[in-house]
Amino acid sequence: MTLTADVDLSQLPFWGLPQAERTEAFRRLRQLDHPVFMQEQVVPFVGGGPGYYALVRHADVIEASRNAAVFSSEPCSNSIPDMPRWLSVYFGSMINMDDPRHATLRRIVSRAFTPRILSKMEEDLAKAAAEIVDRAIEDGPGDFVAQVAAQLPVRVICDMMGIPQESHDTVLQHTNVILGNTDPEYTGVAPVFTRRNVAKGLAKLLRAGYSLNRLAARLGDERRKRPTGDLVSLLVNGEERLTPQQLGSFFILLVVAGSETTRNAISHGLKLFTDHADQRAILLNNFEGHIVTACDEIIRYSTPVIQFRRTLTQDYEMNGTRYKKGDKVLLFYNSANRDEAVFSQPDTFDITRDPNPHVGFGGPGPHYCLGAHLARREMTVMFRELFTRMPHIKAVGEPDYLLSNFINGIKHMRYTF
Image (spheres, rainbow, N blue to C red):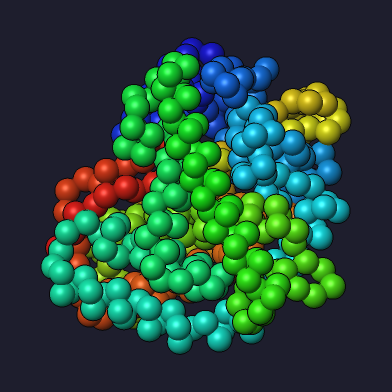
């Protein structure tokens, strides 16, 4: 354990370290001949647990993702401790379910992500990206996240749901609070788990969840009476439909996963193309020929979603390690995406990398990201618009990173064009 004595993935200070230091820490963890066991931090009002195994190798993440019957998403996949009932009513969506419940809900909501519907969205995406860049040019360079990266994903998701434009900023603010619930900028308190600090942070989290839930409920009521053809209309009408509670939790999942992760991929992408002039030149020399592999390399290299949890339903042996029923494991996608056993020169940003079996959208299996194709389309149209209209756009200085063990987020980033 001397190799990892200074690595504690359960402590927030670790996630505040520079990205290069965290990358090195995970490299050292991958060198071990067994997954390391981590103690959980006890959080007031939420509790703790017996600890978890950190799955940091690509092979382990792939196998655990595929074998959902053993590596269960229940009772919770998006929180290390079990989520209390008063939180799960808002954040206990289908990602915290196994089949057949998960399959039923996924079948209903997947109507919005068919290739036919995504193809029809192409023109709307291009129009939205053009308008966002128009405003950025008019306003002048400032915060790339606020002016550009955050705008397209939240607009796309809100338009899909039929949410009026005047509510878009409110939705974005609530998603920031939900994913930034360990960052003092969004909680308003120091990232120390005292009862007072946690109570304040949880109060903000609950208010954000309640507000988004009620927004979805109002839309659901309206669309049951007067369907319009938007996503909410599809979800609340027909033979298979979502209940009001299911609609609320799915909406929170959609706006959080669908807007925050894509915005971070776009933000990381600009930073990467700023730092790697050779890769920028390759892309600009043949944008259409390289943008597909470029998007996947941005996702691999930055890995916007750091980890998800699974709980074993039975004793099981995987890659030489024995696990017991009830054990918790965390699938660290960021580490799997730098696994030397799979990726040649994993710490090199290479937009021509092919094949690129990254797990930035999750591993193969029933919980693979439903919006992966949409995310790639959003990234493509935004980078096409940026590099066509602002060919000299660059990030300036170091970004302001989110303090989180769940999202590799960029809160603010100055830029120039």
